[in-house]
Amino acid sequence: MAEELQRKLTYKLKSENERMNLWVHALECIGDDLADPDSLLQMASDVAVKQLLAQLKANPGDLRKPMEIVQWYLSLLEREGLIQENNISFLQLEAGRLRMEVGQGCPYALTCLLSGKSNNVCKRVLTFISVIRESIAREFDYVLVEGDPTTKCTCELFPASKPRAQLFTKNQVLSLLRIFTDEMERLQEGSVEKTGRRYAQGLTGDLQACLDQFGAGGLGKLELEQLVEGNEQAIFKGTELLQGVGRRSTRSIDEFTRGFLAGVVSRLCGAEINCEEISCVAKGDNVCRFVVTPVRAQDNLSLTRLKTVPVRLGYLSSLDHLILPIAQELLFPNCVGIEVNLKSYSFWRDLNQAIIEGEVEGGFMMLPTVLSLQQQGILLKVVCLGHRNGSGFVVGQNYEQRRQQLRENGERLLIATPSKLGTENLFLHQLMQQNNLPFRTVTVPSTSMTLNLKNNEIDGYVCSEPFITLAEKEGIGRLLVSSYEFWPNYPCCALVVNQGFFHRHPDTVKELGRELEVAGDIIENDRLWASKIAARYFNLSDEIAHNSLLGDRKRILYTNLKPGLADLETIQKLLLNTGLMHEPVALSDLLIR
Image (tube, rainbow, N blue to C red; front, side, top):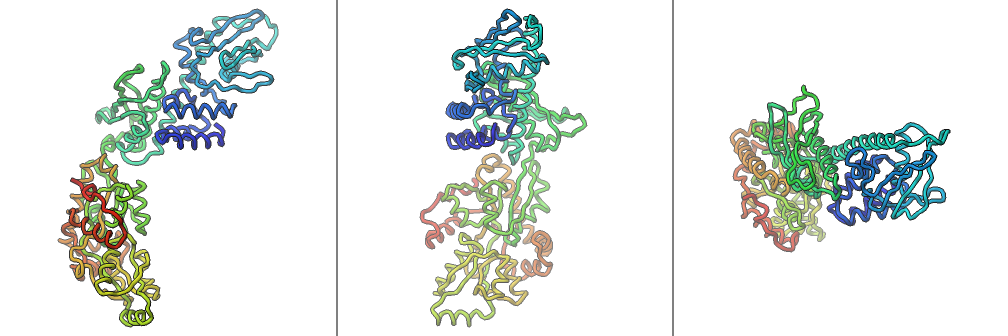
């Protein structure tokens, strides 16, 4: 398909029906090997098909591959010799001529007209002519018979070489059609299966996530039915698979499904995979089954990986998130059927976006942000609190002098927080209001705060460890108020997962939550060992990690990490009071029951 036409069609289909996104993606995957619309798009919504055909009629000549007529001939010929089916006929004429006539009932999807010399010619006729030329390996001429090509397309063929008395025999025609049908069937199966593989390669996530996306595209339901580890086989069951309207149209979706399953399993198991259909032989069958095996017998399919749920979790280099590295070191490797991978981020905005967009299945997020996203319709589940307490208000060494100077000049203190929708910001607002201190805030990454304070660009900051200890160690600032003094058992951030992942794997998410709570107990029982893990994961010196965890232990606690409604209610009340939220949300929807 021409690039410009493909762009227009993609736009049209996306804007017409969001349910068509899967098929738009399939078209983009195929590219120059675009399969015939009857074998793919006819199984999609009628509106989208009409849009496609209208565009093709307006831009004739864009489909020139042999694959364009695959479904036509698969529907046209049941087996060899049935050349009178579906309003297509061949008639031998005098002087070696052969007449082919295609009526209106021909099942080929496209009836667009092409301009050929002085004639309007149905594309199906021209394509057939080109295939005959290749198949019989000799030149011949053709004459296009006048008529209305929208209802009947007729052409006459005759050998180009002399003597013209040489005839196209009946056997020659039948042989030609057998060759053509077999080749087209092979090409059709290969291309549509290839499309399914390409579509699968563009997906991420575990097996269930990929199967869910298959279903979300309106293609039907697929599920892993059985693992036969001794024989290195996986059997999938398909129900309600989308089927077209033609007699052979069930083949296309089945071939796409074969390619899709092979592509998904290949990615998850790291081996070249073959998928064959073992049931569902006719349109209307309720259940189809597919068996997946390695292409090479020596390949270990690692079928257990199909049952393993890969979980990507994001975090920042903050002691607020220490339970995650601790669990990764000691607990997650022992979780059967779960494979956890951690990803470090530098900024809250990047981590939040990664969770929202599905770059990771979950990660740490500040509770005010979670509630704000809930209000916007972005649904998350709170799995485990990261800690209790942990934040502090750090000021410069000349803070009192600076505060007095600003008060005399009618100016306000400039305080940095890591996020406007962060618990530190709520902590700061309460603190300053109680002390009747005018202030303004600026959002600054925690990693930059000590330098900003050193350069007198801010008057103070509120953040987590190790950036409090770091300021004290370097003599840049001092802790004025700790969160445990002002707001005991302060809840700051929590590990969350997107709700879709929770619905697919509720047991996995609950197990992660339990292990993270255990990780908190491990930290409390051996803070010295935990400080070494913190130094390694968060790129800290041993001294800073040690002092942050073993200095004033009340600064940050890793107990009582199970999320509760009371914590969320406190956060929501403060958000409403500060104007950061305008109406409450259903807090119970955030909790895992």
